[in-house]
Length: 388
Image 1 (cartoon, one colour):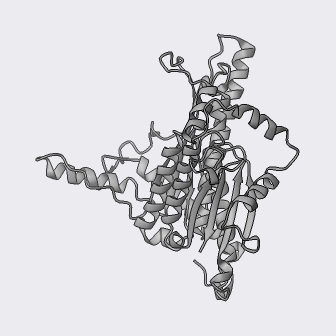
Image 2 (image 1 turned 180 degrees about the horizontal axis):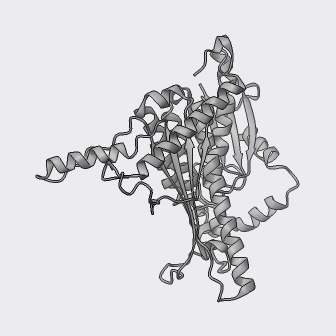
Image 3 (image 1 turned 90 degrees about the horizontal axis):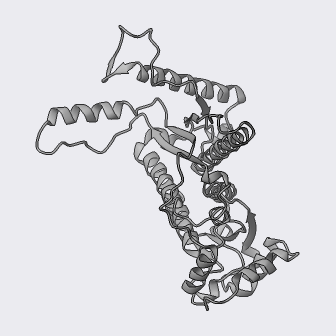
């Protein structure tokens, strides 16, 4: 990191950081692919490696802020999924135009993100590992979310998600990377140690690095054994868990809200000012996020956290002036499932707690239309961020 008294690094210095980190990482990748069983292969060095692919691109994350780095990770994950989905749509259009004789192409891409500028990440594997593991756990939990998109596509057999499988996976590397010890029960101690060393060396890159693997492949066959869930049943179950009469017509309420001429921020703000006893006009702000995707929603939240964190870097500010309450109105994300929204908030909290300087200075809570507590049933899902 640079000395704040001398200002940020110059553009030429930043260019040097980007060039050196990307060059070092690219060389390390090539050298790693050229090894076999942990030893350099000189005899066949001229032969192309069958496991190396041309569909690999490199990018450098130049930010020094952990919050901005996390935002950037989710942004790239979100963008990667959108690219893969667009590929599937394009291939389906070609198949529709050319008929069954057309063989769709599989999309496969690897994005290598090098993170050289954060001193805490560079010097400490544990800090870097904790943040990335929290991100992975949050994304893993997100696979079970009942998103608005999944409900919209539930009965649409022509929907792209029913014809193509898109996956965006994340792996991390580090100069001091270490796996948990690999042990073979009761024997082969030397062999297990050797394997552990090789596993660690294969993940020890010159700088903290993320590898994002993107795939989009056509469905081989529909899952005929999978039970279809009726949208009305989902709505009734959510209403039941909320303690309301399951026969209430929540669909009509949703339609009435959709026809409303009021902006979602105005609707959410009006509800909060009336129903939230902790609301203070001088310390509260309202922000609208309209993302429908899980990675996009995490990106939106940490974009806001990074922005607010940047405002609090002035050490002359009093503690009281830093106490804020933000209401993030997520008008198109998890509107049908309070449980999923609670899990989303928990994922955000776990990631925030993995950031050493942030965990104790921030807390999260939720409002939702289907919340168990009546006094927390808001028109839209609202993630509340309290800055302490």
